[in-house]
Image 1 (cartoon, rainbow, N blue to C red):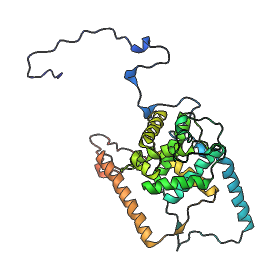
Image 2 (cartoon, one colour):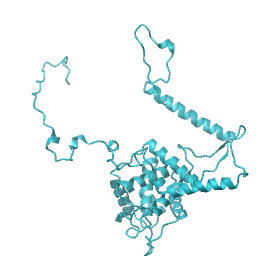
Image 3 (cartoon, rainbow, N blue to C red):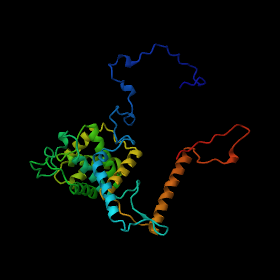
Image 4 (spheres, helix red, strand yellow):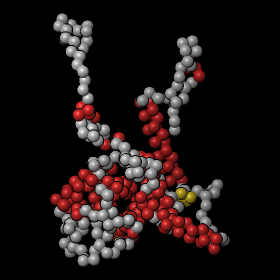
Length: 336
């Protein structure tokens, strides 16, 4: 196998050197050889076409479409604060600490679903065009036997209606809050990749497809398509399969969600909630909850330390280990 000291006496002849001709020289302009295809997560977007569902720096679409509402909410809160200057406000002190039970790693389910429903509401309300696709049209693919009314695409749904639809799916399928955030990421990725707009005529099927995909990617025990047919009684498995297939094709099978993008969506949802008086409720930090948070911190710290040891990386180095005679020993720098 290439070893000259092999026990075999026969030695393979040296290959004849030939001029190498690059295949790209014979390809039409703009095409790339199939042998040098990048992984889908490594593909860079075109200039001017930054995808916030992949780029952690780009602003989310729902924040842009709810910008006016956020500014009005901040102005309203400032005016209310000036009117009620003497109103008591819960603040942390040396004896009491107020915290909400939502973190980026373990968001609160109810409030997260409310925030995602609110983001979808602003997507529909402040859409810029009426680009549609048949697979998401509720009249062509109804979710119930009753069908839809003739003016089904005329009136925007209210936030409560969207929240009720999403909450029903999450409660019946027992999905997590993290899955709700991934659902919003896939929804915005679909709008960009498919050049589509979410509207009164298609919002239910777009949300359903995003939830279906997010639950399979995120949860270890994914919900099967046939299970959703038990939740939505009148939909068929064939329709669910076709919805999932076309959703994936429009995403170009890119279901990767970087942790930085996930964190960006989480904190943007919190900003949206605060501006719309959907702030996560704060409660005094109890002894039991403090012990739980401490245990979670220790588990994460032990996990990170184990990974560093496994990779041969040390977070510090003793002065006794520095060998001045045999040269300078350079320790690996850790950025945290």
